[in-house]
Amino acid sequence: MVIRIHNKTVNLFSSRSPVTIISICLLMLALLGWIDYLTGDYSMIVFYLIPVSLVSWFVSSRGGLFFCILSLFTRFTADEAVNSFTLTNAALHYWNLFIEFLFLVIMSLLFSALHKNLDSEKTRANTDALTGALNRRAFFDIAEYELNRSHRYEHAITIAYIDLDNFKEINDHLGHTTGDRLLITVTKTISAAIRNTDILSRFGGDEFVLLLPETPADAAATFLKKLQHQLDLVMSAKNWPVSFSIGAITYPKSPPTVDEVIKKADMLMYEVKRSGKNRLLHIESPEVIYG
Image 1 (cartoon, rainbow, N blue to C red):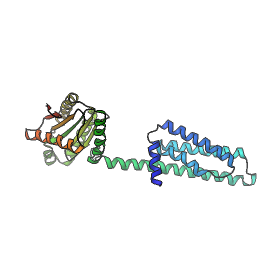
Image 2 (tube, one colour; image 1 turned 90 degrees about the vertical axis):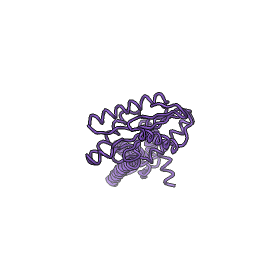
Image 3 (cartoon, rainbow, N blue to C red; image 1 turned 30 degrees about the vertical axis):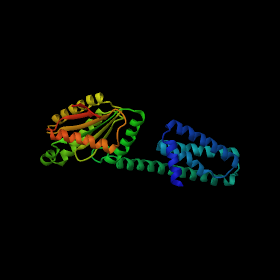
């Protein structure tokens, strides 16, 4: 039950802008202040935790702390309007308000820290630890969505399989540290060249897969040739004797499953390997060849 409520809340607010969330929470505070005024000197602190936690989770920790102050001000204003306490118990009443404020602050900080930790864990679970590119599992999840979208709207989609030629020699002669630097450099070079909607994943030790949504064959061929040239320039500048074998396939519409697409791009890449490496072999399903 708690998990279902959490999931529904996340789905409801995660797509909202910070301004929208803050506006909703301000309305909540106003409503709580009015209820506080009607009920008299009864603690509503648990309900004030709702807007505080929402802002802390979906906006920022500073926003959450600011709402803690607003909650204290709202509680104080409602109590002053009621004026249901006497001078003899005023000190105790204000002390209780202060304790409630500290409770909200602590919970706000806990919600913010929990959200950051969950985001960090999610990022680590979906990305390659060395390069920061998506890992294989995360890629398949996103690729499945993109292929379904391509099928629904009949948009072209391209997938490229990139393998580093002679990478083993780098590790053997220059060391694994240099090999790691090379992989990071390749990832940064590709990431800088692609669009925000494109997906880059590290599939293996020296293998990368690139998904280009809404990219027809002619645009994909032009981009991949340019990308290979940029990668070659970076390798030459670093004096790293590494080249790139790329197999790519474009589906104008209705692509097959993710497994089939990856397998086809992988086969094209190995065909490049067998023919002498350092080349791009790009086909448009089912027959047009670019290279």
